[in-house]
Image (tube, rainbow, N blue to C red):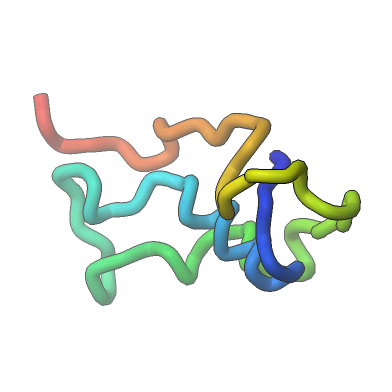
Length: 78
C-alpha cells in the first residue's frame, strides 16, 4: 500500500482508515464503537513504513496505490 502522509505515524493512520470498520456495517464490536485502534497498520511490529521521498505535487493525504479487502468483517445483513 502506498500512502501520502505527513510522517510515519500519520502513514499508519492513513492506512488504517482505509480498512473496513464495524460502524460501516451491521455488526457490533465487543467493546466500544470502533475498531480503528485494532488495525495491524498501527503496529510497528506488524507493519513497516518505508519513506519513498516527497509526494507528487498536488497530492492529498490518503491512499494512492494498493488495495485493502473489505471482507474481513462479515455483516449480519442479508
